[in-house]
Image (cartoon, rainbow over all chains, first blue to last red; front, side, top):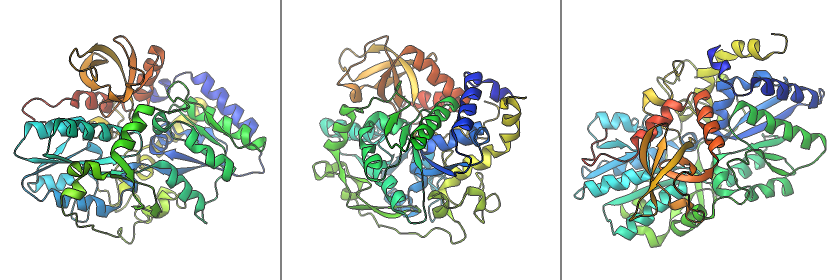
Length: 376
Length: 110
């Protein structure tokens, strides 16, 4: 109950939910994909589905960087850290993600020098403070995070710091959306576009979705009201047979994005010809590698990376859940072998992963419905 | 938040989608890309390098992501964003992240 009281503008939330009910065609089934893992988390956290008519289905998209990373890349990163001279630095999100031989945290328990950093610049500082060691920063994230890694590498180069390198796992959101639209078992009506990725890339990169695929997309904020308003905007478009890019999150997302951030990315990174995504397979031009001009700060160019490929545990159906073909609870392992305390797949590790979100928040829905239904 | 289920703060996770609002207090005299930012009374160094096309001034509000200011926002939007983090149950994780910025000089953070 307390948690619902903290909603901003609950009355407006309720009215917007009512507007959604008025706008839907009862004979139509709507499949809307929220691309960003932050939205997935918020949807479960707020029990948003319960404010929506039953014929609006929210499909969870690929926008959780930890979840889409194939297990082999974690093992590759940890293989670099076998060298006792190496300090392995990564965001806290990565620490419990299972590799074939355990997570970074478990490797730390076995004596590997694994450090949590909250910013790539702190990984750089770690290198400055430990001049006789080599710091490998495990870089991960979409375009929200990639510019910060890029700028950090530019600073390392400018400072001539040689004991720092980046194991780059940055991915780009547009090719993933394209791959999902190309997937034959996936039929979608519209997209709730990612919020913070769009602060960097802006809204223009989504224009091909509306032009070539004729699917509406609304870039959205993360509050219940933001997401409900975005759904209203999508329903208006669908009702009018339109497909446009719209920006509900104008207070944060500029239409043109952040040019300085895009320049930093272009200076340091180039597109990989292809990259493997968990659940989605190999997607062409979907990830970033370090340019040769920054080879000295690229862990993949400085060290032998084994290039491990690990198939996911057979019984786990992470791929199907990632593509939105299965709901989290439809996986055979969900809530039994695979829980947030003992995750088998990455979707159960990250709080932005749909399995962890579903596991942690689904039970709230009764309370939500009571508070927000008009007759309550 | 009491009903955090071990997500966020207590488990030491940070969130790669987390955008934390902060107020620019002071820009370093010898490095215009470094600023002291106040996030709910916690002050930390933040990198302004990604806002070099539209440099914020002391008193401006920014959204911070992994230690870098990503965009300028209004004071009202900053307050709304902090409230969003609270209702998302991520305020504690956000504060932990901010407190984590800037290694102590010994480099022993963990």
